[in-house]
Length: 142
Image (cartoon, one colour):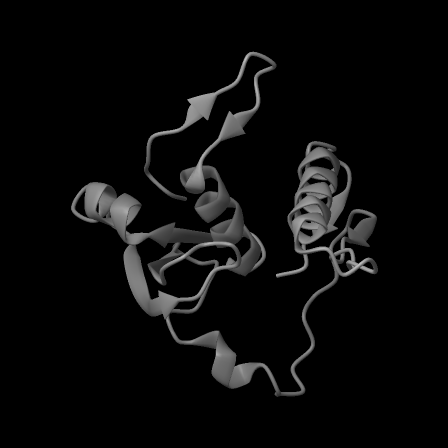
């Protein structure tokens, strides 16, 4: 989640760094979790009863400066501890009841840096469209 100005093009596409930041925050959020930028956090921190965990400054792809990020800890869903410490543990996560699919990033085989942005956008579009199918559990690359 990010708060910013965006430009809507005539075909309905949204453009600007803010759109990229929101997309990158989505990719680093935990499954079913919410990750916020400092701009969004400042607007909601005193309006919600849930707690936030400061994840620090994150380097986000195609964003010039690091972005301070926060994780929203929703009741009964996400522990309020840093999950990176448990990444190497042998705990098994419960499987979803629905069919599931994982969408991995495309690899830029041509070496053109402009195509890297295109490959990321394509993967994000696939994730977005698949996630609209309520019967399908989509696991993003994050």
